Length: 454
Image 1 (cartoon, rainbow, N blue to C red):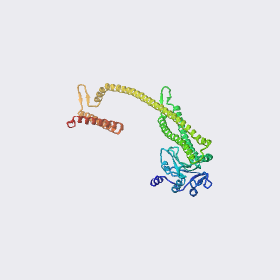
Image 2: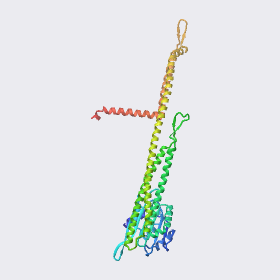
Image 3: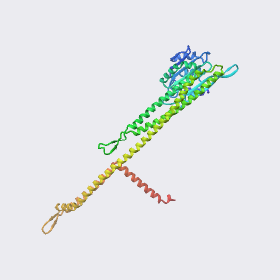
Image 4: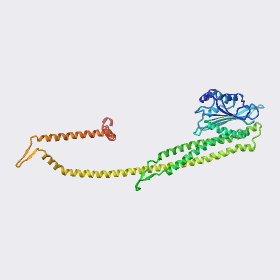
């Protein structure tokens, strides 16, 4: 990696103002535990990669995320750490990989004028997920079993879990430093299983919700059934769809774990081959088995988790289909309710229409007699024995009657126009009909336009 590219990657990392790290060490000169900036700097200054032929085990654990948050180290001390621990520069590429990455590099040295493999450098960055990600870089000397490593986790709780695992595996790490990589694979498996259990319980709750919620409730009289508006089927469907999305995400991290386990299997053989090339005895059968045992267990666990996730996916899809069916049935019942209400409204309207029609017919019988009685009682006509006397001001009744009739008709017309304009539903319907009518007129005009026809 070129210097400019290295500086660019370093500058993308957000560092803390002071260093707070956990230094796990078996050497007597280094501090074992959480260290601050001054102690951390002193440990770095006194540390030398493979300074003796005795086994040296030094692991630094930092909290934070290089991609999203600050990591618990200053920029200067982080650069010194990479140099002292012989961490390869491609590690900086890996920590910015969103989909996860792992790789190994072989270090060579010249022994008796012959170049041979002497060190093994391991890099792994887990995929970004809601369960948190971590990265690891290990520099291993197969000849002496020495290892220098850097582990970065997103939160402090995961740091404590990894530290407890390192302390619990101390004897196994002394026996073979590859146990550090396997215990990190176990931590990844722990996160995946915790995530799977979370969504398994979420699916169980969704299934209970679907199974115990009644689709419709009986009415008070028990003769007909009404829709229960409190059933949140749409929200349950959204929850199930979110669950299937997270199961897909979990499947990706589980696939990465399976690939990491195959990668760990290849590392064991490479570690053995380098030891043989350097003249060191290979791992004893018991030590070799202790390295293999957790890998085989994790391989079986990931395979079973894959089947469990497939079952969860099928269960979620089945519940979604059931919910869609119930939503369709609910909509159908609502449509039936609306149709029944419309039928009853039509019956009531028909009864009202019959009543109005009856009143109109009765009015027709009484209107002529009412008109004659009104005119006769107005005083315009005076019936005498031999003749009928008409009042001289008979035209006043005619003028007033016609004038009032015209005023009433004009007032009624203005009121109807105001009522239509103030009602948004009626006005929108009127505008739509007018626009449709204008469009038809325009279309007809264009159809008969000789220019457009040409």
